[in-house]
Amino acid sequence: MKKLEVAGGSGWAVVVWLIAVTALAGGGCKGRNDVAAGEMDTIPDMTEDARLLNMRDYGDFVKVDVVNPWDTAAMLGRYVLVERGVMPDSLPDGYMRIDVPLTRSLVYSGVHGGLIAELGAADAVAGVADGGYFRSEPYAARLKRGELVDVGSSQAPSLEAIVALGPDAVLVSPFENAGHGVLDSTGSSVVECADYMEDTPLGRAEWMRFIGRLYGKGAEVDSLYSVVKERYDSVKSKASGFGEKPLVLTEMLTDGYWFVPGGMSYMARMIQDAGAEYPWAADKSRGSLQLDFSSVYARAADADVWLIRSYGRDLTKDDILSVYLLNGQFKAFKTGNVWVANTGEVPLFEEFPFHPDMLLEEFCSIFHPGNQTGQRYYRKVRD
Image (cartoon, rainbow, N blue to C red):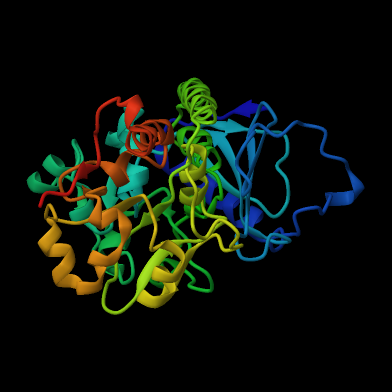
């Protein structure tokens, strides 16, 4: 391994460009079980719970494989994370080199931005997409002062803004068969953050190991994940001892459809880990189910607890009835056991993906009233 000492920045930029081109020319993504040149990879995987993320530390670099959530026999992205200025003796073919820590990144999701800020690396975020969702500090203040570039909608960002920003990497949340749009025209290094497609809360949270290493915070995220995992498992173990398992319904009819978590989603798993029953637990979907009212009512009319996420307003019972009068027929509505998280006011989306232990504890408090611990996200609906 060699570490370059370059007096000027331009020489190093040329070297990095040549390495990137060479890596990209090495070939497309291989299947998950492919072994280059017949060699066995004996370096242990650093991840414990993530299904879609594999990481191995080779000393000179960390090799990262992101599994395609929609075709787990293939890879969505392959990266080697190399400390800036380090020149390993060799790098694996077919992997995109990313020099870390990132210093001028573009981040598409406020969820990832929240973790980056928690790790003390927010200054390394030079731009965001969908700036209105970056409500926490320091992003909100930096956006207001014009110090942080908002490239526009994540679905149709400004090509000119991205090119002018010149990010060293772009963190995106992938969608099936969606591609990267204008990003493909910029030459930017695109990092696929498929954490939201994990099927367990801890699996999603463990993606902090990858994101943290992008910003030079490997030791910090390993320590943080250990704390999150230990606390989650402790709360889950306690919940398993509760006698009754209430039936839990989530969300509400919107524009004629009711979207509920699939039975293999991390949210369905979290409800069950909190000592409750979920109406669609037998379903095999990892995403959301799009249902009509009658389908929901058939499964969840006797739900003991009803959880709803809203944005920008605290719902009342009258609000829920105004959406659809038959909402009043659910057992949870009749007994007054409806809970709403106003995500425009509480940091639910910003916190729970990487701190599922906090939401799990709150679920336990709601589902099992004798174990109240206080509410951070949800409050009971007013009459």
